[in-house]
Length: 161
View 1 (cartoon, rainbow, N blue to C red):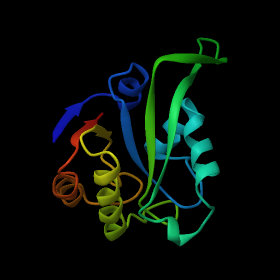
View 2: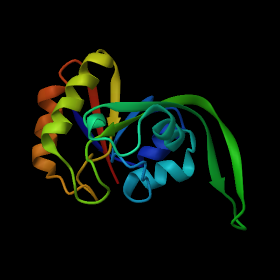
View 3: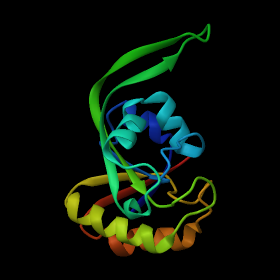
C-alpha cells in the first residue's frame, strides 16, 4: 500500500486513478467531506448511489454501488458551471461504511465491504482517501491496518491532501 500527497479528485479526472473508493452512508447524503466534493464535481456518482441502492436500509451496509464517470462539472472564473467530458473515464465505488450521515463509521461493516472489494476488484489498483476518518469518525491507524489486511489481492493507494 502506498500513501501519497495529492488531490484524489484531480487524479481521477486526469485519468491517473482509474478506480476510486470512498465511504458513504445509507441515506444518499453526499453533502460533506470528500463525498460532497465528488458529488458536486461528478454528478454520475450520486446518481449511481440513488439508482443502484435502496434508501435508508441497513442491509446495504458493507455493500457498494459504482459509477462509470465520464464527465465533470467545473466552475468558471465568473462562477458559471460547465460540463467537460473526461478524456479517460474512471470508476467510483460508493462503499456503504456507515448507516447515517456524520460520525457513524462502523468498522465491522467496513471489513465486510473490503472483503467484497477484494473479490470484485482482485488484481486491480484501488485509490482511496483516508476512508471513514473524516466526518465518519474512524481511526486512521485502525483503517490503515484493515486496508492492508483485507485488500491483499489489490494494489492500494491512499491519497492525502
